[in-house]
Length: 140
Image 1 (tube, rainbow, N blue to C red):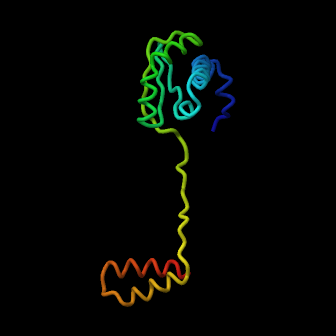
Image 2 (image 1 turned 90 degrees about the vertical axis):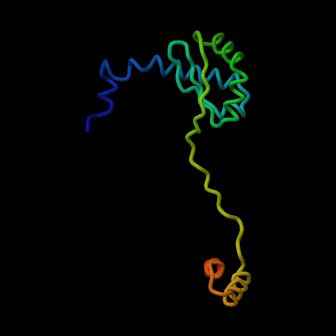
Image 3 (image 1 turned 60 degrees about the vertical axis):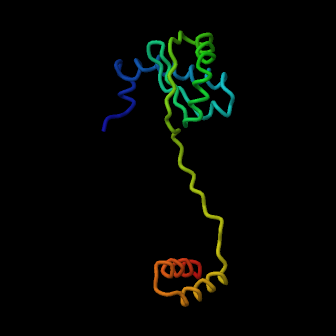
């Protein structure tokens, strides 16, 4: 495996990408300053090419709000940055880890024992199997 710094030091390495990276960072900062915070954290600048800016929105509702604001956004981006000839909004969920919500409902040992007794009284069925599984899971 080659040293990653060797790639960065090459004349044809990352240097040609730096102006575009700076433009994207500048546009992201402007977008964050122009939009309300609640909206700004749900979208980001995805690309800038030949005057066209692509904005990713976290969901359809955010995209709809941004589309309503496109004329004002275009004006603000043009005032503060480079020439913006077009704005496009696309829905792209943000890269965030899905939050695992731990179940807060707990069953007491007493309730599990009552379910076990109920299970004994039920005829053989899918219900009996399910109630039995729930009871045994909570008796541990």
